[in-house]
Image (cartoon, rainbow over the protein chains, first blue to last red):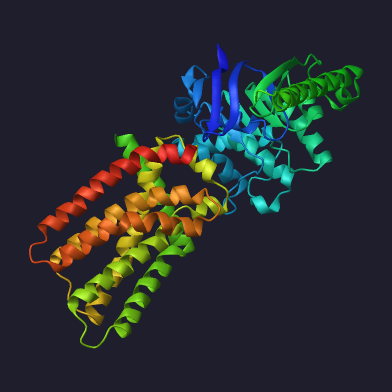
Length: 267
Length: 213
């Protein structure tokens, strides 16, 4: 069974802005999918549609066999945003345990699960710290731990490392892959970085802008587990080039269409 | 249904707890309504009519409510938690109901100070006026919470909320002033009740659309 299934999904804002058009995508259990495309191509909107934060104008969204709305209510997915969005007045421990508190887990069970999560994101010993005592990267790891705490089938990540410096970003990429391998969840990841998308993913979904469409899907066959050396593999560069060309083809196609429309005397 | 009400209660409790810890909204509402009544007391001539004073009471209540409504989504907006709130594993209308309940409590507490203050500065408050105030509170909170959610997503939110809210609050003013001033207020109280039911259903049904568009 697919974890996410999008059939003919479109999204318009008002009459004039078509953000997404005819999106067809199936994401299988255990996949790591990156959505990449130029600014304004609707990749975040697509992620938000999967997360029931935005209602599609048309089409069908199925998450773990349920509607996006039911999946939200049943906590089938966790979301990580670009900002860690932690509660300043709660310790790391209590930030991670918040979804469990809301789900009615008892204190003992919560404590055990939070300990597991802290180990997963390698923050053991930081449970009693407050968010403002942590670096940006550590805060984002807390946010990931919180999103994974209730063991969701799907993790949606909207440019989670976009605000971090390159070194921290590369380190967190490696850590995210380790977390993904250990948690066995399915991840949908929005990014602007081609290298990041290729390094992390099993498939890269390339989107074109205005209206946002899936222009290509590139399978990433780099061996697992990936390490720092993966970035130096010639095949990694080949895949980066392939995704870059797919991106250019997508945007050139759009430009070509726009130019053809502009040059068409009938228009 | 039980689960739905429990979700709304949890969300309302969160806002009440935040207020108890932060003490930002309620003191401002109380201070505002009392200050407004003091200003009105000195603004009206010595032999002011009871009718004019009651009209001013409703103006004070409406603007005090506006103050509370303006802060209904501040905690979520300031901490960029609106998405988190909308992702809560419950029916989205429960978020609206929770916010309505919390704002209703704050408004009720502000009025618990305002009505005695009105008695002190102007004249006595009768039963129909209290009933009208309670009915008006329901309508104010029901409509106002929906509009506050709409405004919180916009840029000019401080301007947007009064511009959207005040025209919709005119029937509340008419019903409230009417119930407080006529001899047989049942018709006006019925009107306020009808307004509450109608707008509560509309706001309840459209809240999800407002927060996901």
